[in-house]
Picture (tube, helix red, strand yellow):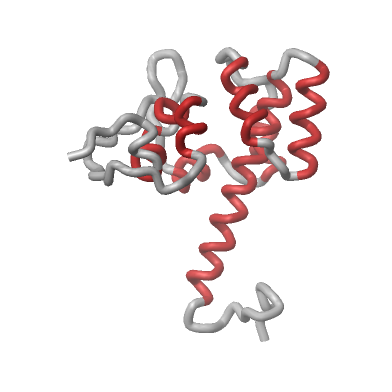
Length: 160
């Protein structure tokens, strides 16, 4: 008999494939967040900032305000040496993350190009109370697909 995935769920039921896919996606998203935090820790200038980001990474708690502040103060630099090694340690390839999180094209500077959001129709409203704070932190430009879907009002949509 197969080993249960969770104490209350068996992996041979009618929804087992969907459950396995959800668990796999959750693990990959967690790995992606930890990978971003780890890279930010390596790029940080001050020992105090590195220690704070390292503490957030170890505890799994990313202080949203501190994270946005760090991102706004960090200039874009090439990925640190050993980037592929970090992916191997986490057990997820960059290609796998991009496939699962939505593929991104690279622009001529090597950064992620903006998503083409013209195909999506969004309501001009904010679904989350934190939308205004995210928009002030630059997320409308950094994360246009998510922000236009969930925080359209904060990103300046026009009401009909």
